[in-house]
Amino acid sequence: MNEWKGTALVQLLEDTVGTRRTESLFGLLEVPQTLQTPAAGPVSRAVLAMAMDMLLFEDLIRRVPSASLYVQQQERDGRKIVFDHGALRTVKTLSGQLPPGHLAFARILEPLGYKVNGVYPLEVLAMTGHAYAHLDLPEGIPQFFVSELHPERFTQTFQETVARVLASAKDPLPAWTQPLLDELREHQQLPFDQARKLLPNLVACFDRQHAPLALADYQALLAESAEMAWIATEGNAFNHATDRVDDVAALSEAQMALGRPMKDAVEVSTSGRVLQTAFKAAMVERAFVAPTGQMVLRTVPGSFYEFITRKPEAEGHLDLRFDAANAQGIFKMTATQSR
Image 1 (cartoon, rainbow, N blue to C red):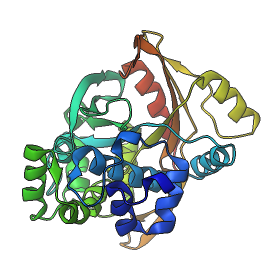
Image 2: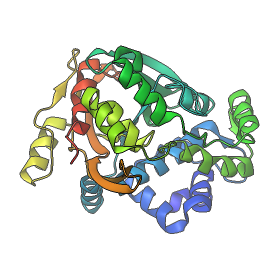
Image 3: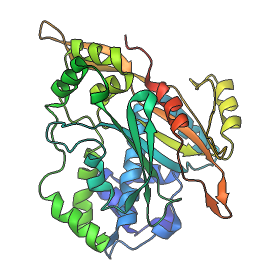
């Protein structure tokens, strides 16, 4: 990490999570060299976006044991993770204080330099995916795949349950962040102190913002949509982070041989240029409100870790698209029944 000393990216991360965690992240992740800008100057939207993405990656591997084991092995082998994209789930409806669906994230991703690069109907799941790519470094800065579930495609009871569960959602962005996001959108940079102040608030958006739900409500949601049940317990936390690898099929075989909890088959896009697989979701304990009013713990699916191979669609350019069929196959990683 020596060549990064004194850069805005390192200073942002060190001021937010300390030197040890910053060094660990640089040891794990491939970071575009073009982001080596001095901390003494303004922070570009690309640098701030990368800082946020690195912290979200750290949070994901902390919550997914199989991901942690995998990235530690990659580090021991001398290979850095190419962070391709992160995914999260939203609901296209009023959610307490939050804007509906992907708009809750468009308000931060767009000022950071992201633009919707594709919209993918996920009809089997009653969802729509919005892919955000970075305008400055589309292949070097991780993309976001923000899916939104459509409650109106389910029963009236389901819709009422969704409304009840999400009504308590709080907005993690304080009012003072809006002028900073407006300035970032207009000028594509912020003074360092403002960027440092904004960063933790951006990261805080990727979490569950609503209160624990009733166990009966969770069971009602699960009966119609495993995806909505997942949102009910995990909220807008990263559903998965994805490692871009040279040969996802070979990697899948190697991980299976190690006894890792791997998806049975590799998903291949219609174009044949995008191949994906994943570890199965970590199982996590979450608190629910029992009929007696007491809190009870249940084990439910959490997040997972994904792998992707992107082949070139033109000389010197990777195919950065997603595929609806691939995505729907990958979504099954969190469809495991709770217990």
